[in-house]
Amino acid sequence: MVFARGNKADYDQWAAAAEAPQWSYENVLPYFQRLESCSVSHASHGAARGRSGPCHVSDHTHYNHCTEVWIEAAQQCGLPYNADYNDASQPQEGVARAQVLIHNGARVTAASAYLWSRSAAERPTIICNARVTRILFDEHTPLRACGVEYLLHDAVAATTVSKVSSSLSIYQSLDLAMPRCRAWL
Image (cartoon, rainbow, N blue to C red):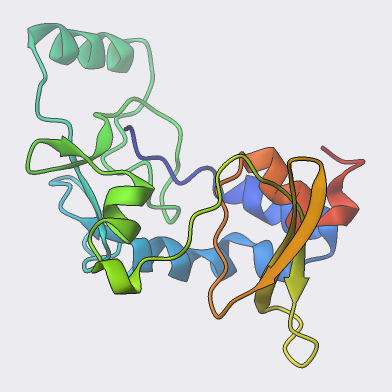
C-alpha cells in the first residue's frame, strides 16, 4: 500500500549492469508518471509526478500524535524532512510521511487500477499458476514485447498478444527482461 518508486541510482545501476539504457531512471520515469494520479499534498507539482493515471497516490491520512513525535525526533537526530521521496530531483534520504495507494478509502491494486476498472470485453485473459519463462519480443521493434512463453502444469506454452503484462517479483522481472543481469543479482 505504501508507494515508493525506488531510488534513481538503483535504476541507473541496473541499466549500466545490463547494458540496457532503457532501464535507466530517466527512461522509466514516463511510465511512473503515466501510472500515477498524484494528490500528495507535499509532492512536488512539477513534471516528476503524474496526474491522470489509474493508480491514485495520496497522503496516508490516518496519522496520530505519535507519527508527528516520531518525525520530529528523527529530525532532531539529524535526518532531513523529505516532502516527496518519490521525486528523484531531490535527495531521497530523510524522514517522510507515507504516500499510499488508496482511493475513496480502498486500496488501489494493479487489478483495481488496470483490470476491474475496464469493461469485461476490454479485460485481458488471466492465466493463473503459470510461470513466465521468457518474454517474446517483436522482431521489427526489439524493445516491444509481443508475447510470453510460460510453463503451465509442466507444459511449455506461448501466447502472442497486442499487450503483454505479467505479475512478477522485482527480481523475476529483471531476470526475464535483462538476462545479462543474472550474475549481478
